[in-house]
Length: 245
Image 1: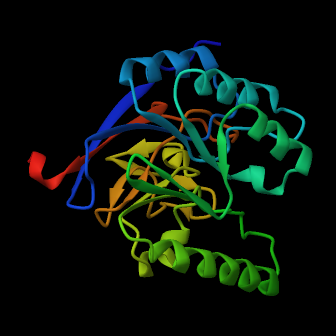
Image 2 (image 1 turned 90 degrees about the vertical axis):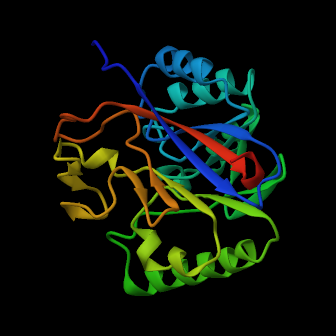
């Protein structure tokens, strides 16, 4: 099957908390998209690190492609990833992810090149009981509050953009990278038609919102609704010190 050519979308962010220019590549929602195509685009970007925003594994019984991508990427760059649907998988898969050389951030953060990289342990809330939702939100709020109190530039990987309004926007985080929405599947007049977790005419489907929530369209597709006017996308992110402007 011929795949659409991947679009590289560049974004620049300036802050006095950034001490040196830093270029990052952000990929999400791989869903068995051909690894050789993804790798070729990342090599063009030449990032200092690769950030993977969840759903790099298709399902519990279709993990090889995602593991292969992490292993290939980790040979060339530091790779940091957070969970999408991977949250609900068995511990064996978690060990496989970590064995690729990638750093798997589950309500954890790591310092890299003078910035703080955090990964939220996100889950889909659809189908959960109210008690389960409240418990999960409270756990993440507690971790996010600690993360937001760190001194310096804070970049958060959070697979689900709908969580931004739910609680993330209340915390001091400089940049949030999300996927999950698949660009809204069908795009017209720069708006998406439908996204999981948001439904029809999603608020957050692609691009920059509130100057700090950046939603990538991702690469693959697992829905009956096709991707139309919605090319696969990898984000090229430039973090720049204020004095460089």
